[in-house]
Image 1 (tube, rainbow, N blue to C red):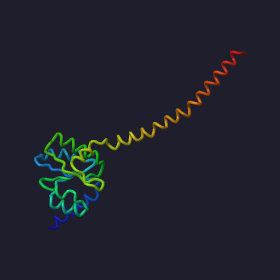
Image 2 (image 1 turned 60 degrees about the horizontal axis):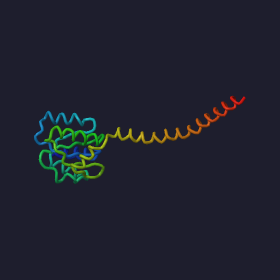
Image 3 (image 1 turned 30 degrees about the vertical axis):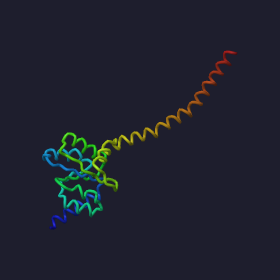
Image 4 (image 1 turned 90 degrees about the vertical axis):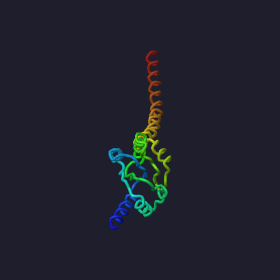
Length: 171
């Protein structure tokens, strides 16, 4: 009994402290495949095989009821502590290579997500790419402004040179 209570407490903490939580079914995957999946997402998430009844109690304790109907069969959860998009991509890619892994749903940013919405999340570009694009958007107007400020200056220099050349040829 104390062991179950400790497991529920640990799961509740994981639910509360995760950026996102992705519920999967792993029926038919080998231990080696699960190890590979854990390795693929280790940098951004932990992946744990869970007992459905204890998980439901823990999720409800953390204020999450989105998984109540999906907690059936062999379940495992990715508790995301890093980049959610990267984890969604890794799970999508792994499930393409290993169709026995099924994403059932997720809980992200205070809202439940369907499996299809997790797929859309996986289609987003990574945080680094989005930040690089944003930096490019900020940088472009600066180059335009620099060109705009330099154009009249260089035009004035060319005009002065032309006048000087004209005056020298007149003398």
